[in-house]
Image 1: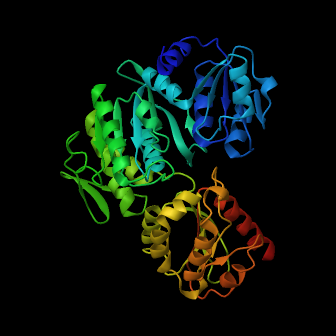
Image 2 (image 1 turned 90 degrees about the vertical axis):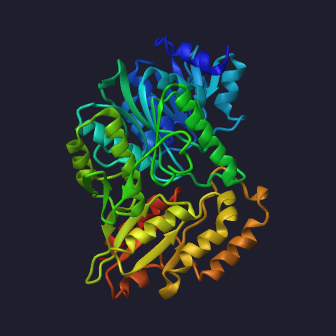
Image 3 (image 1 turned 60 degrees about the vertical axis):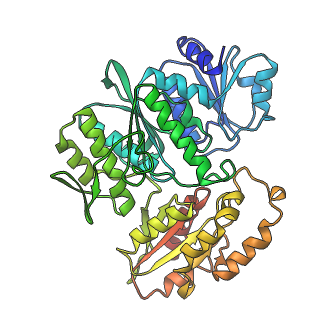
Length: 452
């Protein structure tokens, strides 16, 4: 029996205990909460503590940090995240004790089969867009469950437990993740696609590679009698699999005779909003609910999130952003430039493979802000990659910093504080990164506050 079919069968038996390895990530922690909502006894672990593991601890009885195989309940079905290696002690223990052990792929398949599932895929913007879709459906009274790849400000959570149904199934909105190809395992009723771009170069060697997977994703959705709704950014590429009649406005998004003023800044948000219109039309939802969510949706944490202000006559807004790909950073900076005359960038490199592949693009994007010592670097975040695998990294990274006159920050931000104190123009400091940059932004604000 195939893994997908076996897990589908297991989920028909909510008396079976489930253990999640790598539950500290935003995706796996959300799956753990959803499984608990379905009635399963859940245990969960991660090698590191963090925000999402703490949220699990507040909801579930048995969650721990580190490898503690003896705490896994007898007869458990074990699921692990893509970041968990084969030699993980709990994973090895589960196999040695003949427990059923699976990646998250068949779990996603089994869950989405049980729901009327709306999945949001795309290289950039899928977290905000999936949260936006959920907000829209909530306003329309459809009360969806939601699994989002970030903390939604209105909910203060990445997971929402809803009771709504559509076509006789409970309704679910979720992200469809291409980073490990798990989006190919989803059984979707409606697929939204924000854009297609090369990322995850540890897995995909070219844009063509990832385009092929998106074609497969669209084909599998259509093959299951689902609907594919792309944004105007990738509608042309996917024209063989869907149709769209959308167009852009400068300060609003316009389709046919309807105009929507959008609260979220940036061209990329206007483009992604185009899919919400298509979704409203597909589900025959009154456009007044779409207008409400366009004007009132507050977004997701770490997406151009203003965390605070440095204070003083020329106080600088401190902005926390998840951007870790050059195209994401460029889009955010272009959006911020319409509001701020001065932008100070604190950049955290994320993944050695990504930096080495895109170093020229990173340099081009950041070079525009090279003046006035406005570029700073946080310690590089390696993720699961090791320096031994990339012996050329140190030399290339040092050259990169020198070319941009980018200063590496110490733990006390001693290089950044004088720039803030001597600022003669109101502006912003934006912390970019997908690793520890958010914590760094918070620590920086604490230091500023203590110095007042």
